Length: 346
Image (cartoon, rainbow, N blue to C red; front, side):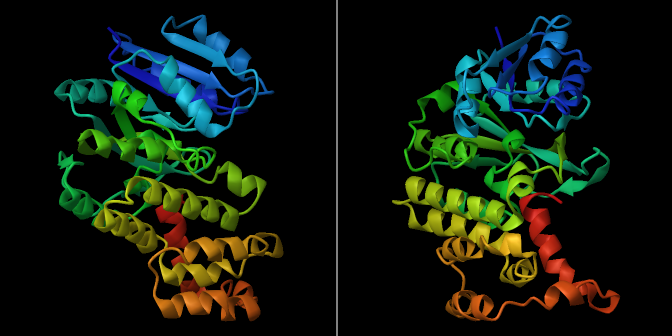
Protein backbone atom coordinates (compact mmCIF):
# COMPACT_ATOMS: atom_id res chain seq x y z
CA UNK A 1 0.00 0.00 0.00
CA UNK A 2 1.25 3.46 -0.89
CA UNK A 3 1.09 5.65 2.21
CA UNK A 4 2.55 8.85 0.82
CA UNK A 5 2.73 10.40 -2.64
CA UNK A 6 5.34 13.13 -2.98
CA UNK A 7 4.15 15.20 -5.93
CA UNK A 8 6.26 17.74 -7.80
CA UNK A 9 4.50 19.90 -10.41
CA UNK A 10 7.19 21.47 -12.56
CA UNK A 11 7.79 23.57 -15.65
CA UNK A 12 11.20 24.51 -17.06
CA UNK A 13 13.05 24.00 -13.79
CA UNK A 14 15.64 21.44 -14.91
CA UNK A 15 18.27 23.59 -13.21
CA UNK A 16 16.73 23.12 -9.77
CA UNK A 17 14.91 19.79 -9.97
CA UNK A 18 17.95 17.55 -9.26
CA UNK A 19 18.48 19.27 -5.90
CA UNK A 20 14.91 18.48 -4.86
CA UNK A 21 15.10 14.88 -6.11
CA UNK A 22 18.42 14.32 -4.31
CA UNK A 23 16.94 15.59 -1.06
CA UNK A 24 14.16 13.00 -1.40
CA UNK A 25 16.09 9.92 -2.45
CA UNK A 26 19.01 10.47 -0.09
CA UNK A 27 16.60 9.71 2.74
CA UNK A 28 16.30 6.12 1.51
CA UNK A 29 12.68 5.84 2.63
CA UNK A 30 11.09 3.86 -0.17
CA UNK A 31 8.56 1.56 1.50
CA UNK A 32 5.09 2.97 0.91
CA UNK A 33 6.38 6.16 -0.74
CA UNK A 34 6.10 7.19 -4.39
CA UNK A 35 7.42 10.29 -6.13
CA UNK A 36 5.49 11.84 -9.02
CA UNK A 37 6.82 14.55 -11.33
CA UNK A 38 4.16 16.24 -13.44
CA UNK A 39 5.87 18.20 -16.21
CA UNK A 40 3.79 21.07 -17.59
CA UNK A 41 5.19 20.74 -21.13
CA UNK A 42 8.70 22.00 -20.33
CA UNK A 43 10.98 22.87 -23.23
CA UNK A 44 14.22 22.55 -21.22
CA UNK A 45 16.02 19.36 -20.06
CA UNK A 46 13.42 18.37 -17.46
CA UNK A 47 12.54 15.09 -19.20
CA UNK A 48 16.18 14.04 -19.48
CA UNK A 49 16.90 14.91 -15.84
CA UNK A 50 13.95 12.92 -14.51
CA UNK A 51 14.63 9.89 -16.71
CA UNK A 52 18.18 9.70 -15.34
CA UNK A 53 16.71 9.40 -11.85
CA UNK A 54 14.09 6.91 -13.02
CA UNK A 55 16.90 4.57 -14.04
CA UNK A 56 17.96 4.51 -10.39
CA UNK A 57 14.66 4.68 -8.51
CA UNK A 58 11.65 2.54 -9.40
CA UNK A 59 9.24 4.55 -7.27
CA UNK A 60 9.71 7.69 -9.39
CA UNK A 61 6.99 8.31 -11.99
CA UNK A 62 7.11 10.95 -14.72
CA UNK A 63 4.23 12.48 -16.69
CA UNK A 64 4.43 15.24 -19.27
CA UNK A 65 1.45 17.30 -20.41
CA UNK A 66 1.01 17.73 -24.16
CA UNK A 67 0.39 21.45 -23.60
CA UNK A 68 0.98 23.85 -20.73
CA UNK A 69 -2.27 23.50 -18.77
CA UNK A 70 -1.39 26.13 -16.16
CA UNK A 71 -0.25 25.76 -12.58
CA UNK A 72 -3.65 24.88 -11.10
CA UNK A 73 -4.44 22.12 -13.56
CA UNK A 74 -0.95 20.68 -13.20
CA UNK A 75 -1.36 20.48 -9.42
CA UNK A 76 -4.67 18.67 -9.88
CA UNK A 77 -2.99 16.31 -12.35
CA UNK A 78 -0.48 15.38 -9.65
CA UNK A 79 -3.25 14.50 -7.22
CA UNK A 80 -5.23 12.47 -9.77
CA UNK A 81 -2.15 10.46 -10.77
CA UNK A 82 -1.09 9.75 -7.20
CA UNK A 83 -1.93 6.50 -5.44
CA UNK A 84 -0.96 7.36 -1.89
CA UNK A 85 -3.30 7.81 1.05
CA UNK A 86 -1.71 11.23 1.56
CA UNK A 87 -0.27 13.72 -0.91
CA UNK A 88 2.59 16.09 -0.27
CA UNK A 89 2.97 18.61 -3.10
CA UNK A 90 6.39 20.26 -3.16
CA UNK A 91 7.93 23.16 -5.03
CA UNK A 92 10.31 22.01 -7.76
CA UNK A 93 13.09 24.38 -6.64
CA UNK A 94 12.95 23.59 -2.89
CA UNK A 95 14.41 20.71 -0.85
CA UNK A 96 13.35 18.37 1.95
CA UNK A 97 15.25 18.37 5.23
CA UNK A 98 16.89 15.08 6.30
CA UNK A 99 14.49 12.78 8.13
CA UNK A 100 11.39 14.65 6.99
CA UNK A 101 9.82 11.75 5.09
CA UNK A 102 10.15 9.39 8.05
CA UNK A 103 8.72 12.09 10.31
CA UNK A 104 5.68 12.52 8.03
CA UNK A 105 5.13 8.77 7.71
CA UNK A 106 5.08 8.50 11.49
CA UNK A 107 2.52 11.27 11.94
CA UNK A 108 0.09 10.37 9.15
CA UNK A 109 -0.59 7.11 10.99
CA UNK A 110 -2.73 9.17 13.37
CA UNK A 111 -5.17 9.65 10.48
CA UNK A 112 -5.96 13.36 10.52
CA UNK A 113 -7.21 14.92 7.31
CA UNK A 114 -4.12 17.05 6.82
CA UNK A 115 -0.99 18.23 8.58
CA UNK A 116 0.85 21.53 8.37
CA UNK A 117 4.62 21.63 8.72
CA UNK A 118 7.28 24.21 9.47
CA UNK A 119 9.50 25.77 6.82
CA UNK A 120 13.08 27.04 6.68
CA UNK A 121 13.88 30.05 4.54
CA UNK A 122 16.94 29.87 2.29
CA UNK A 123 18.35 32.28 -0.25
CA UNK A 124 18.45 31.52 -3.96
CA UNK A 125 21.61 29.43 -3.46
CA UNK A 126 19.86 27.46 -0.67
CA UNK A 127 21.86 28.97 2.17
CA UNK A 128 19.84 29.00 5.39
CA UNK A 129 18.33 32.34 6.39
CA UNK A 130 15.70 31.78 9.06
CA UNK A 131 12.70 29.79 10.26
CA UNK A 132 9.52 31.05 8.55
CA UNK A 133 6.83 31.65 11.14
CA UNK A 134 3.37 30.76 9.85
CA UNK A 135 1.43 31.44 13.03
CA UNK A 136 2.07 32.95 16.44
CA UNK A 137 0.75 31.37 19.62
CA UNK A 138 -0.38 28.05 18.09
CA UNK A 139 1.26 25.16 19.94
CA UNK A 140 3.05 22.31 18.23
CA UNK A 141 0.66 19.37 17.89
CA UNK A 142 -2.46 21.56 18.06
CA UNK A 143 -5.54 19.92 16.53
CA UNK A 144 -7.90 22.31 14.74
CA UNK A 145 -11.51 21.25 14.05
CA UNK A 146 -12.55 22.94 10.82
CA UNK A 147 -16.22 22.31 11.54
CA UNK A 148 -16.00 24.87 14.35
CA UNK A 149 -16.15 28.51 13.24
CA UNK A 150 -14.74 29.55 16.61
CA UNK A 151 -11.66 27.34 16.18
CA UNK A 152 -11.10 28.56 12.64
CA UNK A 153 -11.32 32.19 13.78
CA UNK A 154 -8.84 31.54 16.61
CA UNK A 155 -6.44 29.91 14.18
CA UNK A 156 -6.78 32.69 11.59
CA UNK A 157 -6.14 35.35 14.21
CA UNK A 158 -2.81 33.66 14.91
CA UNK A 159 -1.69 33.73 11.24
CA UNK A 160 1.33 35.97 10.59
CA UNK A 161 2.19 35.08 6.97
CA UNK A 162 0.56 33.69 3.86
CA UNK A 163 2.12 30.35 4.78
CA UNK A 164 -0.32 30.25 7.69
CA UNK A 165 -3.14 30.44 5.13
CA UNK A 166 -1.50 27.44 3.39
CA UNK A 167 -0.25 29.75 0.64
CA UNK A 168 3.01 27.82 0.33
CA UNK A 169 2.21 24.61 -1.49
CA UNK A 170 4.67 22.41 0.44
CA UNK A 171 3.41 23.27 3.93
CA UNK A 172 0.56 20.72 3.90
CA UNK A 173 0.38 16.94 3.76
CA UNK A 174 -3.25 16.12 3.01
CA UNK A 175 -5.67 13.25 2.43
CA UNK A 176 -5.84 12.43 -1.25
CA UNK A 177 -9.34 10.95 -1.05
CA UNK A 178 -10.65 14.12 0.59
CA UNK A 179 -8.98 16.32 -2.04
CA UNK A 180 -10.70 14.33 -4.79
CA UNK A 181 -14.08 15.12 -3.19
CA UNK A 182 -13.56 18.87 -3.51
CA UNK A 183 -15.62 20.36 -6.31
CA UNK A 184 -13.86 23.04 -8.32
CA UNK A 185 -15.03 26.58 -8.90
CA UNK A 186 -14.81 28.47 -12.17
CA UNK A 187 -13.85 31.67 -10.29
CA UNK A 188 -10.89 29.93 -8.65
CA UNK A 189 -9.59 28.20 -11.78
CA UNK A 190 -6.50 29.88 -13.19
CA UNK A 191 -5.70 32.00 -10.12
CA UNK A 192 -2.65 29.87 -9.23
CA UNK A 193 -4.04 29.32 -5.72
CA UNK A 194 -5.78 25.99 -6.21
CA UNK A 195 -3.84 24.46 -3.31
CA UNK A 196 -5.27 27.06 -0.90
CA UNK A 197 -8.79 26.44 -2.22
CA UNK A 198 -8.40 22.67 -1.83
CA UNK A 199 -7.16 22.78 1.75
CA UNK A 200 -9.73 25.30 3.00
CA UNK A 201 -12.49 23.33 1.21
CA UNK A 202 -11.81 20.51 3.67
CA UNK A 203 -13.97 22.45 6.13
CA UNK A 204 -16.99 21.21 4.16
CA UNK A 205 -16.12 17.67 5.23
CA UNK A 206 -15.69 18.44 8.95
CA UNK A 207 -11.95 17.92 8.63
CA UNK A 208 -9.39 18.09 11.41
CA UNK A 209 -5.79 19.15 10.91
CA UNK A 210 -2.70 18.94 13.05
CA UNK A 211 -0.08 21.66 13.36
CA UNK A 212 3.50 20.35 13.18
CA UNK A 213 6.01 23.12 13.76
CA UNK A 214 9.12 21.13 12.92
CA UNK A 215 10.62 22.50 9.67
CA UNK A 216 10.49 19.84 6.96
CA UNK A 217 11.14 21.92 3.82
CA UNK A 218 13.87 24.33 2.79
CA UNK A 219 12.10 27.06 0.83
CA UNK A 220 14.14 28.71 -1.91
CA UNK A 221 13.38 32.44 -1.87
CA UNK A 222 14.18 35.18 -4.42
CA UNK A 223 13.03 32.87 -7.22
CA UNK A 224 9.39 33.82 -7.80
CA UNK A 225 8.38 33.43 -11.46
CA UNK A 226 5.72 36.18 -11.47
CA UNK A 227 8.11 38.73 -9.99
CA UNK A 228 10.82 37.83 -12.48
CA UNK A 229 8.49 37.95 -15.48
CA UNK A 230 6.35 40.93 -14.45
CA UNK A 231 6.75 42.80 -11.14
CA UNK A 232 6.51 42.60 -7.35
CA UNK A 233 3.25 44.57 -7.32
CA UNK A 234 1.77 42.25 -9.97
CA UNK A 235 2.65 39.26 -7.77
CA UNK A 236 1.06 40.88 -4.71
CA UNK A 237 -2.04 41.73 -6.77
CA UNK A 238 -2.37 38.08 -7.78
CA UNK A 239 -2.27 37.10 -4.12
CA UNK A 240 -4.85 39.69 -3.06
CA UNK A 241 -7.17 38.67 -5.90
CA UNK A 242 -6.80 34.93 -5.37
CA UNK A 243 -7.29 34.94 -1.61
CA UNK A 244 -10.24 37.33 -1.77
CA UNK A 245 -12.08 35.20 -4.32
CA UNK A 246 -11.37 32.05 -2.29
CA UNK A 247 -12.75 33.73 0.83
CA UNK A 248 -15.91 34.74 -1.06
CA UNK A 249 -16.37 31.26 -2.50
CA UNK A 250 -15.80 29.28 0.69
CA UNK A 251 -16.93 31.52 3.53
CA UNK A 252 -19.91 33.41 2.10
CA UNK A 253 -22.15 31.80 4.78
CA UNK A 254 -19.53 32.16 7.53
CA UNK A 255 -19.02 35.93 7.94
CA UNK A 256 -16.86 35.65 11.07
CA UNK A 257 -14.50 33.20 9.40
CA UNK A 258 -14.41 35.27 6.22
CA UNK A 259 -13.56 38.44 8.17
CA UNK A 260 -10.83 36.60 10.07
CA UNK A 261 -9.41 35.22 6.81
CA UNK A 262 -9.34 38.65 5.14
CA UNK A 263 -8.04 40.15 8.38
CA UNK A 264 -5.09 37.75 8.34
CA UNK A 265 -4.12 39.01 4.87
CA UNK A 266 -4.50 42.62 6.04
CA UNK A 267 -2.33 41.88 9.08
CA UNK A 268 0.67 40.54 7.17
CA UNK A 269 0.15 43.01 4.31
CA UNK A 270 0.19 45.89 6.80
CA UNK A 271 -0.67 49.50 5.80
CA UNK A 272 2.84 50.62 6.72
CA UNK A 273 4.29 48.32 4.04
CA UNK A 274 2.24 49.77 1.17
CA UNK A 275 3.78 53.28 0.65
CA UNK A 276 7.33 51.93 0.06
CA UNK A 277 5.94 49.88 -2.83
CA UNK A 278 5.19 53.13 -4.63
CA UNK A 279 8.89 53.95 -4.66
CA UNK A 280 9.60 51.08 -7.04
CA UNK A 281 10.53 51.66 -10.67
CA UNK A 282 8.08 52.76 -13.37
CA UNK A 283 7.60 49.24 -14.72
CA UNK A 284 6.41 48.18 -11.26
CA UNK A 285 4.07 51.16 -10.88
CA UNK A 286 2.05 50.30 -13.99
CA UNK A 287 0.38 47.54 -11.93
CA UNK A 288 -0.47 49.93 -9.09
CA UNK A 289 -4.14 50.74 -10.04
CA UNK A 290 -5.22 47.08 -10.06
CA UNK A 291 -3.25 46.46 -6.86
CA UNK A 292 -5.14 49.33 -5.16
CA UNK A 293 -8.46 48.01 -6.42
CA UNK A 294 -8.03 44.64 -4.78
CA UNK A 295 -6.44 46.10 -1.67
CA UNK A 296 -9.57 48.21 -1.10
CA UNK A 297 -11.70 45.06 -0.86
CA UNK A 298 -9.92 44.12 2.36
CA UNK A 299 -10.89 45.50 5.81
CA UNK A 300 -8.47 48.43 5.91
CA UNK A 301 -9.59 51.69 7.48
CA UNK A 302 -11.56 54.23 5.43
CA UNK A 303 -8.80 56.82 5.82
CA UNK A 304 -6.22 54.35 4.50
CA UNK A 305 -8.38 53.53 1.47
CA UNK A 306 -8.96 57.23 0.79
CA UNK A 307 -5.23 57.93 0.81
CA UNK A 308 -4.63 54.85 -1.33
CA UNK A 309 -7.05 55.97 -4.01
CA UNK A 310 -6.10 59.65 -4.14
CA UNK A 311 -2.88 61.05 -2.75
CA UNK A 312 -0.58 58.12 -3.53
CA UNK A 313 -1.75 58.01 -7.13
CA UNK A 314 -1.82 61.74 -7.78
CA UNK A 315 1.30 62.57 -5.81
CA UNK A 316 3.50 59.44 -5.92
CA UNK A 317 6.39 59.29 -3.48
CA UNK A 318 9.16 59.07 -6.05
CA UNK A 319 11.54 60.68 -3.57
CA UNK A 320 11.31 57.66 -1.27
CA UNK A 321 13.34 55.66 -3.75
CA UNK A 322 16.23 58.04 -3.12
CA UNK A 323 16.00 58.57 0.62
CA UNK A 324 15.68 54.88 1.55
CA UNK A 325 19.20 54.39 0.28
CA UNK A 326 20.50 56.94 2.79
CA UNK A 327 21.93 55.17 5.87
CA UNK A 328 20.26 57.59 8.29
CA UNK A 329 16.84 56.71 6.85
CA UNK A 330 17.32 52.99 6.36
CA UNK A 331 14.47 52.32 8.82
CA UNK A 332 12.07 53.21 5.99
CA UNK A 333 12.98 49.91 4.35
CA UNK A 334 11.72 47.88 7.29
CA UNK A 335 7.98 47.86 6.45
CA UNK A 336 8.65 46.59 2.92
CA UNK A 337 11.06 43.95 4.24
CA UNK A 338 8.39 42.82 6.72
CA UNK A 339 5.87 42.45 3.91
CA UNK A 340 8.26 40.43 1.77
CA UNK A 341 8.99 38.16 4.75
CA UNK A 342 5.30 37.50 5.33
CA UNK A 343 4.45 36.87 1.67
CA UNK A 344 7.57 35.36 0.15
CA UNK A 345 9.82 34.65 3.12
CA UNK A 346 12.53 36.95 1.73
